[in-house]
Structure formats: structure tokens, C-alpha cells
Image (cartoon, rainbow, N blue to C red; front, side, top):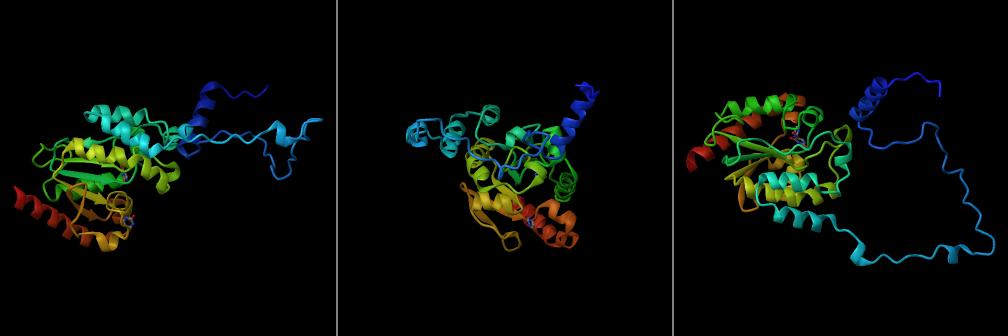
Length: 262
Ligand code: URA
Ligand code: URA
């Protein structure tokens, strides 16, 4: 080959493609698979004989949700749960992600915040809510004297429904959410919050089985035996500043609930 692309340039090009959400290697010449014809059967052997249908044995088929439940159940602490998620082989998002984004903040805090999934900055750094939406979240929390770097009385603990960034920040698929839900539920058990704040439609779907954040926000609900307060997602507030008014009311409701229980 006479192409002069060096190792560093090739690596930079590859990283750029990963950044853009490319998850699959394909050849550099397009192949029109509609024009491809099946190879002729070998002389004297009918296709039915040469390729018998192999019945799928139920015992060989994998149930990712059941496997996730087992792996999550045996994790005895947060570190073990993170390892179990890293070792979980059935969620393809892991292949396109740089980091597993597990948590930030103070384990044992009364308030546990559940977001959607990591974005670009979160994927790069390995922590939830560190990009623009995360900065807004920090300001929202500070307004009611909460923060991820406070002590556990005023601290928050933060995670997401999915620990890996979906390509191009697309919405999580129902299958991805279903197989990661056992890990999220175990995460909540091990972090032992007194209440959950779920931000946006995706965690409402995962934990409450409901969508329609505009109706759900500000209304206490219940999941996994805990009070749950749905709120708008901070990324939505960045796009729709007028909705900050409702979010301010929800933050005051959260503060009032904490003060009542204190
Ligand atoms: N949005 C989320 O839902 N979670 C993050 O961690 C970052 C952005
Ligand atoms: N849609 C979402 O998913 N989240 C919001 O907070 C608002 C609209």
C-alpha cells in the first residue's frame, strides 16, 4: 500500500468516528446486497440436506434480563455492582462507549437522582451530569441547598437508567432499558436513599412504567418502595427556559418534603 496515513492520524480518525457514534466497521467499498445472488448448491446435494434447520434449544438461548437479575442480586455493595455491570455482556451500547458511567455524589444521601443516559462529556469523563445539563442541575440543587459534593445530610447521589452513552444520544431502546433495569433497582437498594428524583421521560418509563413528564412532574409517585418525584430533565430546561418555572416549584416541593422529614 502506498497510502501514507500514519498511526497517529489513523488513530485520530478512528477516535473521531467513535465520537460520531460509529459502532460497526464496514468495508470502504459499498456492496449492493440486493444484487448478490445465492451461490449455487453443491452438485448432488440439495440445500435442504446440506443445511438442516438446527432447532434452537431453549437451554442455549440467553435471557439478558434474567442474567442481569442474577448478576445484580449477587452484588453485595456498590463496587461489586459496578463490576457486575462492566462484566455484563448483553448490552451492545457498551461496545460504542468509552466509559461506564456509574454514579457521582454521596452514597447514603437522602436524595437519589436518576437521569437518562450519559452524553458525550459524561462518556469521556465517566461521571453522570458533567456537561451543560449537569451544570444546570448543580445550580438547581444549590438553590435548595443540595449538592453532589455536600455531606450526606445535604448531599445527593446521582445515576442514570443506562450506564453507557447511546450513539448520537439517541433514546434508549426498550430492550436496553429492560436489561439494565435490574442493575438500576439494585443500585437504588445499595445506595439506600430515602427518595428518588427522576428526571425526564426515560426514568419515569423505567421506574414508574409511565410516560408524559409534563403531566407527571411535581406529583409524588412511588417505586421500589420509595417516594418518587418526577421533574423535567435539565437538558429540556436548556431548550425550553420557560419550563424552569415549573421546575422551581418542584424544587421547592422537594425542599419542603426533606424539611418535613428532617
Ligand atoms: N443527561 C442525563 O440524563 N444523564 C447524564 O448523565 C447527562 C445528561
Ligand atoms: N421530554 C423529556 O424526555 N424530558 C423532559 O423533561 C421534557 C420532555
